[in-house]
Amino acid sequence: MEKLRVDGPVGAVDVKVGELTLGDKAKVSNNVRYVSSSVLNRSMRATVAGEVIKNDITTSSTDTKADGRVLMVSLLVLLFASLVLYLVARTKIELGVVISQEKPFMKALWGMGVVIFAPIAIAFLLVSLLGSLIGITLLLGYILLITISILFASAVAGGFLQKFIMPNMTFSVVWVFIGGVILHMVLLVPYIGSLIYLTVLFIAVGVLAQSLYLFLRRQ
Image (cartoon, rainbow, N blue to C red; front, top):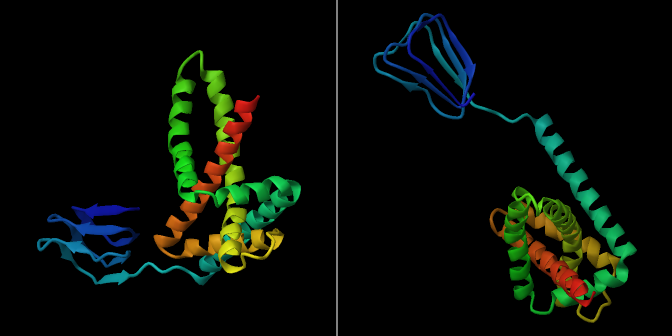
């Protein structure tokens, strides 16, 4: 419950709430117990016969451990999928990594444009009677593109790391693993981490979108 306001006679108050207010007409004949992250808003005319007891909201260690396990499993699944993608399409992934390092800023702009404007175009097609089938096809393609881009982003990150740390070393599956770990670890850094992750993801989307465009153009 986000907010609760008491503005009349009650026996007792025992709630977990975001914000508790005792109005002018509140008359509590017993204790007021509440669990909240904010203090009680109490009118000067409100009367409480008992005590006012506040408990802060606490996160149990069990919940924290469970959240940590979920994040770890999610990271392992993404890493495993990224490694499988590299092993299945090794030549194309390595070519994509090379392309991502050529004018990466432009690739990021391409990717941002696809992520933002493609859903708008798809929505227009879906609401039109004639374009609904095309819209559904493009929607499925868009979802597939974003999914592959998320996996490909690990290779892109690994490619940039390999270029700056060991430029003479051959790109391999090891760099995909390292790039995936570091890319998802930076998400723990507020604001900057999300910006870095989105930039790499946009580059990955841009590379795949450009490659798909050139492929369709040749057909």
